[in-house]
Length: 382
Image 1 (cartoon, one colour):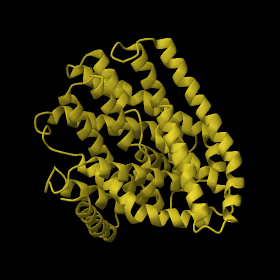
Image 2 (image 1 turned 30 degrees about the vertical axis):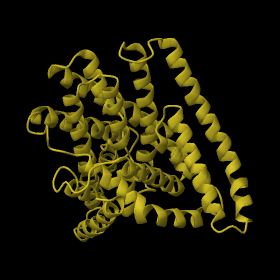
Image 3 (image 1 turned 90 degrees about the vertical axis):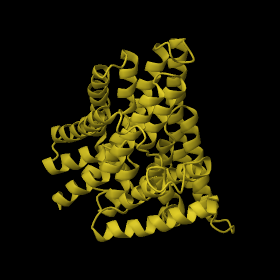
Image 4 (image 1 turned 90 degrees about the horizontal axis):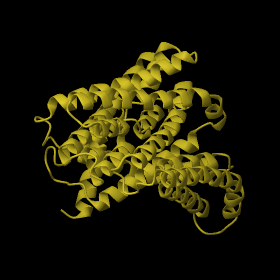
């Protein structure tokens, strides 16, 4: 099937299944995730993951996190800095401990076990963002805590991964001092670069708003966000971090609402549905029966480790039990960051192909379950 045919199927199924779940008072994103499972290798096998779909998907998550940044309140993020950092730190320690120990008990080597724990230490907030937006909770205390924690979570996961690959003999570079200090220097420098962009953004948008070129401000905004996403990826961080900070930078401009409307149309009309469908396309049931016990244990531990980290850390800072449940549920999804880390481990032979396949299944399961769990606790809080 040609790419245009695949695109038609993806968008059409996303609309139909999204509408079905909306009628059931469930998040639209669940229907988009399930459309990938339906169309992909798991069931009908009409569409297989390929580079072009992955490219559209990558652009979709960048736009999604850019929109999240545009809608975020920087003052609230500052207010909940300590809480977010605590959630993130706990949310990295618990998965590495629980999942690492379980993997070791399943016969993995110590290095394999620790690496599998690291895979599940990162949170993908993209799906939680959509559910929070649909339920009007993105600006709530819980929504702000989830966004802030997810940012620190990714940074801490990258730092832990850097330390692990530097000191393990499986990495390509066995010089730990050079490896670590170069990575840290680049990452610190990146946040200095973000600060500079944050200061210059109002002037840039003001300049483009005076131009007669159609959508000059929108083009400038997209260029800015793509630059921050690309540089984040270059220094070893997740590109979604750059996209989110790009949205925060543009939030301070008078044109941010106009830009948001334009990007919202571009994103949700094509790229964001493809991103969620692409997650479903990645799942297969090839090794599911063979490794059912291992997959089940990892799925349970992946869910409770993040849920407990978010819930109890929030309650420690004065959140109610219901708010704590929302924060915990919002941290469950793994998504693209975990997929990238798992791919790295497989490419440098830290884990075998069989283990890699099982990990991918667990990542997809947690990603699909997370909007159901988050939606349940949000409904209970209303």
